[in-house]
Amino acid sequence: MDTPYTSAIRPPILDGTYYGPWKLKMSMYIQSIESRAWQRVLDGWTPPMRDDDVPGPKPRSQWTADENNAAIYNAKALNAMFTSVDMNMFNLIGTCTCARDAWEKLQTHCEGSTSVKKTRMRLITSKFEKMRMEES
Picture 1: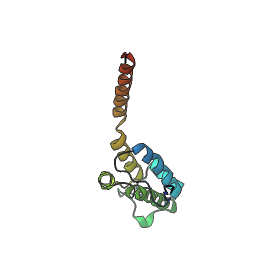
Picture 2 (picture 1 turned 90 degrees about the vertical axis):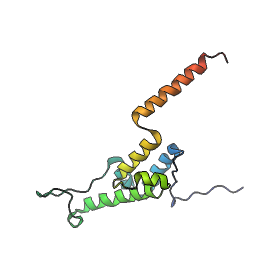
Picture 3 (picture 1 turned 135 degrees about the horizontal axis):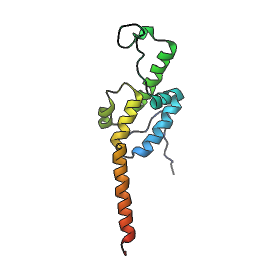
Picture 4 (picture 1 turned 90 degrees about the horizontal axis):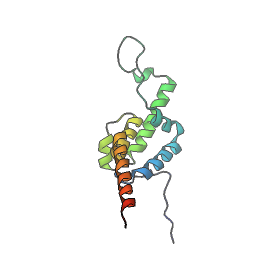
């Protein structure tokens, strides 16, 4: 009997179902690419801002090595997410420039906000209580 083979080169694909397993697999996938890429998912990333009186982000040519590296790790994590979702999920996160923002959008879309999670938990608890009270 053949065993299923999954490649570390190919990320898991999210189509809107089975978000829980995808989330775990994807976190490991991004960490396997580069642990600092996963850090960008956890901490977020914003383009470095100018130090002078001119508002807005610094020109890329003025970025420090650390600022450039943070941008690269953010791009790696974001690319991993872009290539691991179907087109419906991609349309949700396709405009994100920060890996953390994309991660949070997917999480909110698939799991719901904190209040939605609490409401779901109350409904499940209520159903369980009703099941215990019935004779059958």
